[in-house]
Image (tube, rainbow, N blue to C red):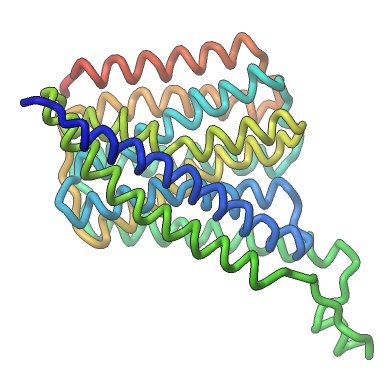
Length: 328
């Protein structure tokens, strides 16, 4: 089967739309969150991470609705390997850093736990609707915990909350947010992400099948790399500006959201049955997650050579997936 020029063009447009849409979505959401007095790390773990994971969410949901469980799950697993291998590896090459913040260490553990839970769920290569609901519930609990931290930080900025104002007879102060422009960028960005997600699933699947590649390999390579472009760009920009907290938080938060939110919602919409290659892929993801978690939790410096190793592991994973080894 030959590959049409139209398919390649649509694929390129889809990736570009995802990238632009995610950037607008992240920028607008970050402006709103910053005005509320939230720290860069919390923004990285939540607003930036979930914003840059919007392409994974859109693609996996679209794939689930179309019955392409391999693309849906492959996108999640492949994107997480990409985030830890390529994104975090690139950050380490540009700006070697040491994880010294307690919350960063704690959330690294949360990422490891989310990976372990997803591994257990995917062990039988089926994600049922009840299991999807459990994953979503775990994400909700994680968000509640981060919300408590964010509220404490907002109170620590010196603003007078409505509760404090009522108790002390003071006038409450609120952050100034450019609601019109920010809301507009957020909605347009979201539309581009959702639209680009549908185009990416259709064109990437068509392209892969045309050259004899399985849907699973398509999901963990082409689709996963394409939807992870926002994380890569955002983290590299943050690292070059010495905003390592945002860069590292973006990776950790995105991986947690992908495993619990994206996979959970996709399975809740439609139970997923996936390729026999899943267990082997989860071994790759578990290994690279364990290494990065140990580095972050122990407070060790993530050096340039270690960043290069992370990149090499991601490259090896893609090569193994592309050639279909191991197949399960």
